[in-house]
Amino acid sequence: MLPYKRSQRVGHLIREEVSDIVLNRLKDPRLGFLTVTDVEVTEDLRHARIYISTLKDEDRDEAIEILNSAKSFIRSELGKRLRMKFVPSLEFRFDETTRYGDKMERLLKKIREEH
Image 1 (tube, rainbow, N blue to C red):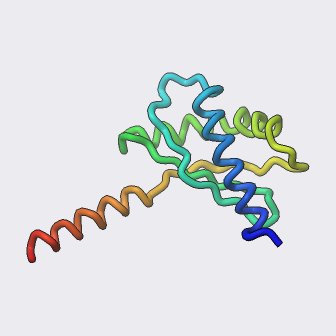
Image 2 (cartoon, rainbow, N blue to C red):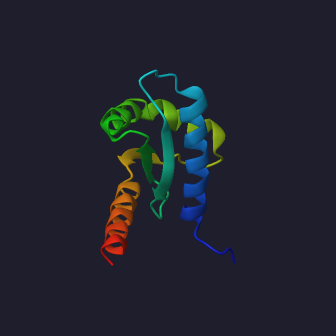
Image 3 (cartoon, helix red, strand yellow):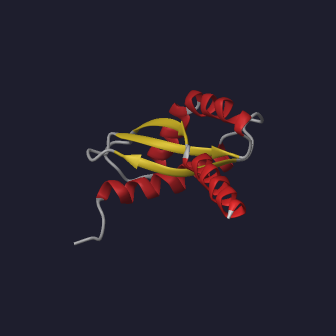
């Protein structure tokens, strides 16, 4: 038996491929520094939620908008690269974990300074 579910393995593969597509194939000058941080795929492999982070917080809404407008292109590129019967529908979201981690780091630093 494999150590983790197929949906997790497909998620990791989609993360790598979407990162490559955005970096090398998507030609939009408005798209700045962008990182695909995680992909969650449903158990039936029909839907994929792709989490991204940007270098600047003010670029995040525009990046999500650009990626959502290029969703069909990215999905067709995935179809060429993945050997799957169905390519999942894509949904792009901003990854809040980096912001949450920064907040926790600031709080811990403040506690250390007080003691």
